Image (cartoon, rainbow, N blue to C red; front, top):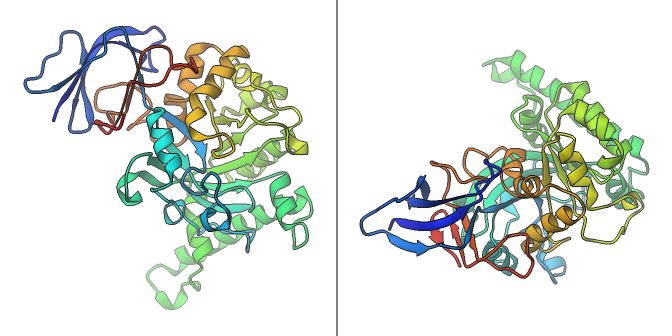
Length: 381
């Protein structure tokens, strides 16, 4: 059935100033945005006096990979037996029945980019997925958004007694698998259609081919400034695409980051500095980077911060000096761009998925909960 959202104050994440309009939803998509829209037989939602937002998007989460309050049995976020696991895929570890997904959805978080944690130097592929459904195959937008890699303390801590005691070792291991993939690709290309000349099949290197072919970026976990620069150095060395994740010390290196013009996902900021590399953590970081002209997303790293509190994180960034429109973009269109699905989600525009949040007031007011949440045009709250 068509749905017609009438007379809402639209915050579309494209125009800075909101405007009053109707939204027609048909076949799970935004069919029209304008004044005095009509649709015979449509279900009408009266949004007069209410705020209408695009569904909120988290560009870096582990939702569905590890549940709140769950021990080993519910933890599928890190494969702790191997420091290099590019062949692992988030879609194979995602649990749609996790109650945390429901909490996220009814709070207006309609899409997350979720995947492996940061224990491994290379962890596997992230995916973009909606927060409602029973079968991940029907929820996923893109099952291969990026290849997770990690710098800093996590790989050091997790493998210090095995083979990764220093930051130098982490960088060397990443370079090694990239070089192995380049050589593997050369041999495949040289073999052509001659099966006898083909290199022995290597599942890990096959998984890395989209990275060296620039089809997907490295999704680089990096908190400290030196780790951020190492990620950039290696990406430049091999001509790879890169997104920066966490960027905790980004406010200390603003000029250098603006020169690089890379997508930055900042957070999680609503926690204590539980590691040495988090000592400079502040909610001022996303605002400083956005004001300088950077493409900034705000992230929860759920369950580090519960997924439903993504808008709260944006609110706290505003209280620390971030422009309100920049904060809205940081949990909508910028996050969608960060994970390469802005053609589907992240703003209220004709042709995009009808992921919409209707609220009695500002989404940046922690006391305000959505009246309605629509995902693919279906009311989930």
